[in-house]
Image 1 (tube, rainbow, N blue to C red):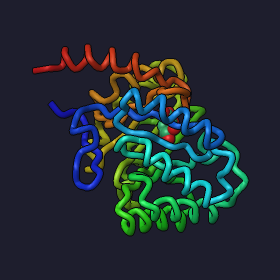
Image 2 (image 1 turned 120 degrees about the horizontal axis):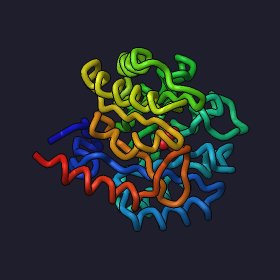
Image 3 (image 1 turned 60 degrees about the vertical axis):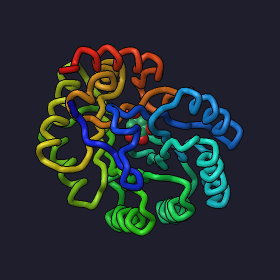
Image 4 (image 1 turned 180 degrees about the vertical axis):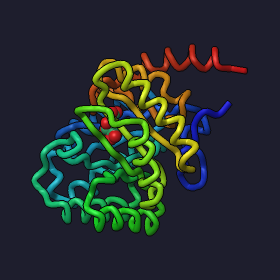
Length: 259
Ligand SMILES: O=C1C[C@@](O)(C(=O)O)C[C@@H](O)[C@@H]1O
């Protein structure tokens, strides 16, 4: 029974079509830290890796970023890679480069062939978002449009409208991560994910963050979220659970949901 839409790389479903896909972030500050994390995480065989380049202290040097992206690719054992710069506006780290320089870095990395997905915030300046769409088409990478709110959870209608805007803007995958202020907000995200699947045809990734939100990371896929971000070595957002714990819960859920 498919609850989620597959993410594809080179026309093939990531993770062999299993669901949900488990994605582990890399958040090291330098090459040694990133590669150390990578080796530990690859051993746990997640379906996807996300390199959060805003944590990398060498971000101002595109050459260093491309070189490290290539090294990650080499050691990732074929696990597809998402390249993400999260802005401070949406909960990322402070970086010393301009938005034009971020775009140039994305272009260099995507053109190097070292990554499969690029993440771009829908709130980016329209010309930057449009350039990311074009870059994805040119390089054959897939564009994940993202939206984050670390303070609160918008209404289900607003979240669905965000998914629709992402599809209209040319994304290949639509992702929303928001903070609950109570358990109702976790339900709002699940509800918006179910509705979102009817409103758009892209794969959706959704999560509620923080302590209550961890519930959505465990069973949000049943409501249509294709990916769960889980801790390989270090979390990149509040509420992520260790891969080992996520897998235990998934095993039980998958068994109980067998027709
Ligand atoms: O967008 C997301 C989702 C996330 O914020 C989470 O809550 O798991 C973690 C980020 O690293 C990733 O880019």
